[in-house]
Length: 115
Length: 115
Image 1 (cartoon, one colour):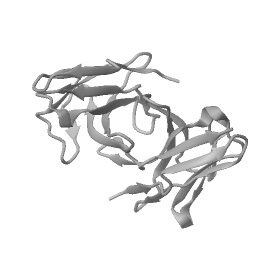
Image 2: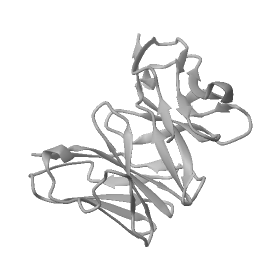
Image 3: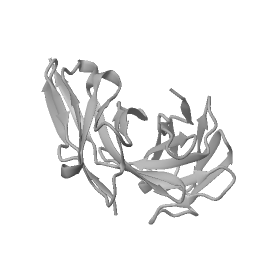
Image 4: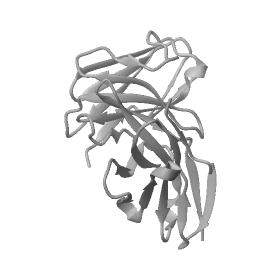
């Protein structure tokens, strides 16, 4: 069965500092990979996704992620965080199931920004 | 991006009653909608996949008689929690997509509290 691991439950970063959120997956083939952000009490917003092609993916809000097949990883990065980036971040993997995509989410990483 | 609206945003109900949650795609037709459950500080767990005009496909361990899903049109899916109990209290989130490989758009979620 596919699985997604986000090793860091909570990360605290100073405003303006760089950020890297880790994500590892377990799946037999190359999956579709996603990063979502969830603000308190809100639904999820897609930051970026990887299906194929260039392994460095650019997303919204200045985020990027790099797919590394050898490490089964899809880490999310941002060179300089803003206070508004404080939220919960979820990595997700999708595979096709009877014509539908099923998303499997990691447990999430809560990002706190300090001044 | 496309908008998915959930209603209500929060609901409190008495134990033993039923609650209906609506998920609407406001500006696109959703061939597939997904229902997730999120426990506090935990990840999203897929409950079921629904395709317009057909029966929902439930994930293992999800009681289909308790969580009734109806996807009667391309813009509306409903989740009815029947005979709700306090353990059903959770954050329920829907998502909708236009087709396989398309981006999934998430509703803002519904917080259900059963007292």
